[in-house]
Image (cartoon, rainbow, N blue to C red; front, side, top):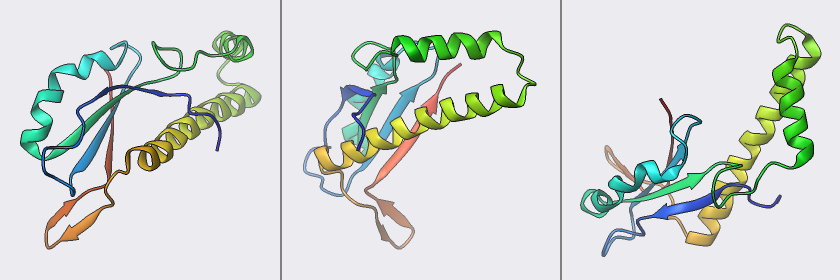
Length: 136
């Protein structure tokens, strides 16, 4: 597995006395800046039987910064014509790589934090991860 590029910034921990809780992983968007946006949610987590984890994406505090090569690539893509097929292809690859970073982060998180697996009991499902991306 590649090194984990995202970083956990906030973690409510497991709800008291629960082993079947769902973990909500929040990833911020560009405009809102970073995971600190979600800090007010942490005190609500235990009362709702969930754990909340907020992660920072690449290039935000605590996470891995973009390399000079990645920054140059972004600048080149931003300056290029979006209609060009090679630009679209390279942009898609760049975004696919960022998606892989999120995947690697979640795999590492499940292993490291022993996230409870999903269990369905009738209409009620518990455990597992709910991934939430948010921005304005």
